Image (cartoon, rainbow, N blue to C red; front, side, top):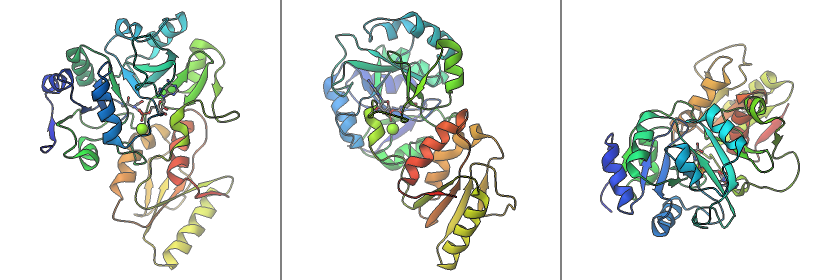
Length: 327
Ligand code: TXA
Ligand code: MG
């Protein structure tokens, strides 16, 4: 394929979708890689471009609540209340799918994840597409998710005709995924458990017990090309400093991402967003990608599991994989 064009022209991108093509587009969370949800060939191309396993379903992006109703079996009162509270925004609802929704989109499941994204340019694009758009994050599988058009270009150059450039993704991490039938949080995000509970009552947090319900949960995620070590526990500052000194003594190039805002002494090797989990989440993938080729190790001082901290730690645990140190 010819080289990929970064554009702000939503109509050109929507026309490509209508022609059966696949296009990357900005959202307020991360960039998505979209196809007409009813075009099986185009959806297959999304899986191929990402190198995504076929049992990991895609999120269906809609331009309105009316359109959401066309992809689910039953639009419930709770769905309506959540949509009124959080859409357009970073919340995906998993509900029983309508008969017409392709199994390839849902990874063979009878449920579908649906969300109405928040950026103005994205809404414009979805309206112009005129169809629901199935889209995973626009990274190759296992890579950190893209939060800028140039991140998408690194992973997808030559594989797709267009990237709809909406600037940086202000939330910076993927949407909260809520299974509405069981009121289980399948993936934490910037819409917090506390906020969801205000609307629908108690929400179970996936991962405490049981097997994965969200197929994506079992696959590697968010891995940059250097080692990420996550430090949790009661002595995070001390342990992080010790590990930093050890790595430096071995000649490793190392930086500290101070997610928990615990490092007392700041210097140029410490990346800090103050005490705001929200700002840290907004910059997380850009920071992970930005250090590729520059360091051997990123030590991450962990944050609390409250509010957006739950989502931030979820992404950091996956980025670190087996390199989690309890202090
Ligand atoms: O913010 C976002 O959600 C971004 C933007 C582009 O909208 N999309 C995104 O998509 O993060 P993706 O494919 O990278 O992650 C979708 C997650 C996966 O963990 C997948 O397993 C889960 O949602 N999911 C999708 N449909 C599901 C279903 N029917 N049942 C359970 N989990 C589902
Ligand atoms: Mg993803």
